[in-house]
Image 1 (cartoon, rainbow, N blue to C red):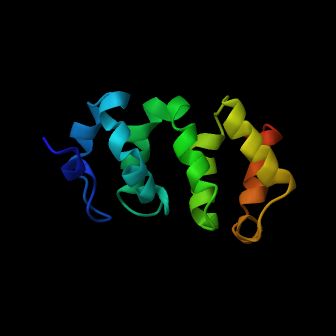
Image 2: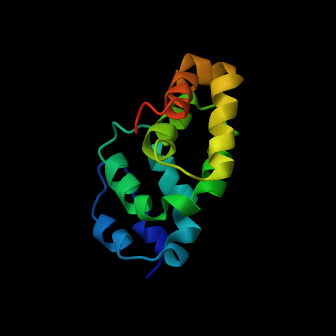
Length: 126
């Protein structure tokens, strides 16, 4: 099995989700960046399925998520915070959430990522 073949090819491509859910973190690790690309818009039909695939590994995703926070894609950052930031206990991720809440970039303000970060820090989702 070629792991790349399991990565969705279009917004409605959910044929391999069941296969992806059976993989361990070590097995899925090489395609995590490709899967995270599908979380750029949670409204895409495949997005929630991909989030479900990655959810069991959320405590191991921080290095990949930090790469997303280096981009200028405010909406992607927003969705990452809503999917993974609300429950995180990871110190590195929490430090980035604090940075966004206190000194956000322009795209983070425009997409209200800073407001989501503030809500997370304020415990609004507990």
